[in-house]
Length: 177
Image (cartoon, rainbow, N blue to C red; front, side):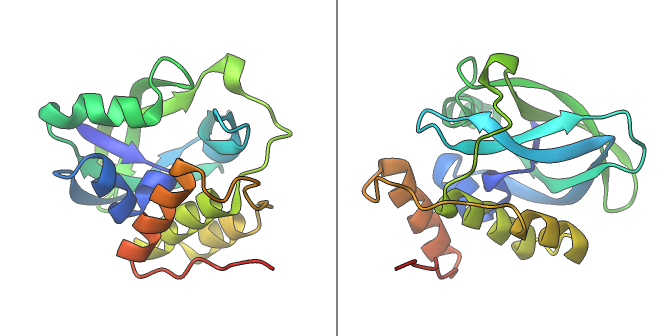
């Protein structure tokens, strides 16, 4: 399955913790889409969603991976398929401007809250994945500009998993006093 990662799974090390045999195919972009951190997570923070727009100037960048069929259910579980996200097809343009149909995960309408803010560790995963794959500087800057907050539960399992992925990618997670 061709998978378009646009959030925390852009960081290869994060995705590999979830689906170890995923292979990198390249950077891609989705036209008439924008990135939002408005999907309510189980921890009540904001996670990424790819919003469809009618604006031709809106473009969301991400990373294409090939996920083996044998690991699809692992990715579905990690994404909360049926609970927070629904999967669907998306047409993206690869680095050669070739149209590619891929699978992506989109927030369920009942899980969207525009007031949500991501936790700092999740935000760091998204920024680090964008930097790792050299997405356009202006796009990275727009992600960096998103406000994040510290996780009130520093021992949260998902936070610790995220920190391990960042460590595996040689990314220093900034600690706030």
